Image 1 (cartoon, rainbow, N blue to C red):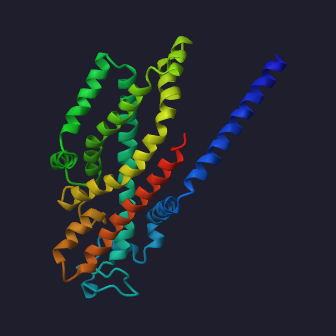
Image 2: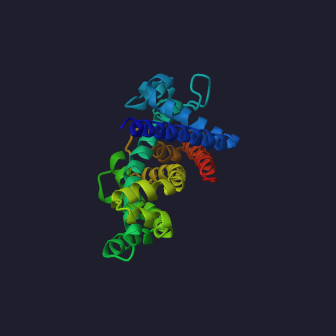
Image 3: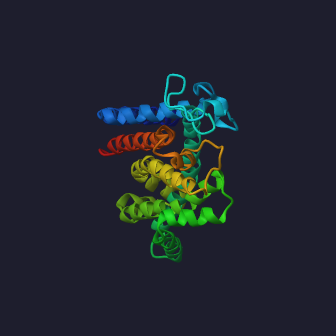
Length: 299
């Protein structure tokens, strides 16, 4: 009995050592690209800024209901780095709070669509040739057949215009892409010897799906998640731009671009701030996604 316990302890220690070695190897691959490090740094900085916007923004009160017509339409200066808008609000402060709503959209949308799409894709791929596969695949095909932006705008137009419903609209049109991704990967490895061996040993379906199949596909899924973060922002900004997303005075980046574009080209700085904010978030997540792809390239 003592020998079995000792062997089990050694096995657990060896398993931990292997995991630590794998993490070191993955970090080594990631840091080979300076652009990947830049992307990670940008994401962390933007997240920090968004989380502590009240302390980072020079004029936090300008993110809400605030009017001071004496400071309206001021160009960029040391007091207002990105100038002021038509109500005298500091554009830079509103962009900082806009990052918070952007990260909220990314977090909520991806936390809904990724687990849903991945689990459905794994189930459809594992039960290939059954009614379950047909139902899941055909349902996802219906959603994919419609242009994503048009579908999101159609859903948002039915719901009350606000930032939460905009997130729901993006979520409802995004999950099928994860179904297709995981389904194609699962079907390609469904009949591999290690899967058949696990089935022969009596492993449960949940064990095979989440312990055997999912870890192999995780690298590709994580890469898509980081790259999709930028697309979530773009779709969300498009919904807000046409007035179906966050409503003023909410400092949503897409809403600000839509609201401030009416004052182009004379007051160009008003639109420049939120537009550059959108570009910055998309660029940072794309660079991070390239780094995560490199991590799993050698797996």
